[in-house]
Image (tube, rainbow, N blue to C red):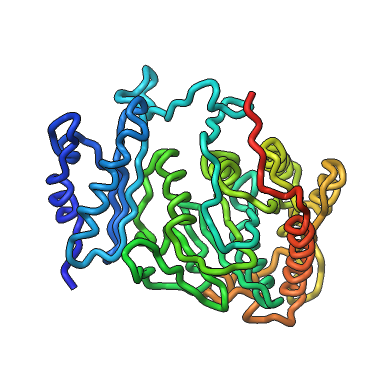
Length: 383
């Protein structure tokens, strides 16, 4: 197979001409965020926000040019719009939207919401208000518990800046494409997986603006051949930023699960995440209390390191379900790091039982939501 290097990609793109400016896209400085892993290539084509959709043919031309190179197996080219110069504070510019395209709170709302993932019965977002609460570990073990119950399950790792799901699932290598258009997700333990971690090296930083992240997430949904799934588990990055809003606006989410630790500072951020989903009319299935307590493996003494019961009280206060608690346990950490999550490596353990109980509650809520005729995904309210 021919070697695919960044320079070869840039040389190829240097022959793609922007007809409106009569110059190639590389010399015009329109190509950014180029990443190459094996035969998989990703990059952004940056344009002025006033040009918008008019530049879509140029994006397709760039994508087609790179796809034609020997050794290239897949191309993800995203179109991003930004201002031509930085603001007075020197920060990177942000995308613009008209007042009619803004959601409550000033966020941009889509002009044309449409399902991006045909064949998937339900989509559940796993979210947290802050990092470090074990959200990805929870997402992976929940996905595996749902698969063990007989569901057809996939997991989408939307944490573009810190993708960890492939390592937790023990998945390596890179995705392939049979038709050159759609990527086949990789699979382990009966769960299909797609992540930026499968397209770039672990040590490669993703220095991407928010619009590039949003476009990448959309393409990982639209351009991946997920097949028929009962549940797609979506592991969101922490916080309430672009990735969360992209999913809420562009995908008919069945519901969301909030992961938090028991202490007050984590619950404060979890509350923000819950309220964000409610603002865009995505049902919140409930809250999971992770690292709920610690039991010494030597003496059996129980210590509530981060306090205990805070998530249950917060769920009651906010009028949502408390889905269960998971202990702070060294075996959960070790099995996740080794790519053998505890639900599959030690399914009879109390820790795995905790994840299965949470998964059973989530499955019940999915069935109730999907069976509800009123369930048609989030409703974006324009003000």
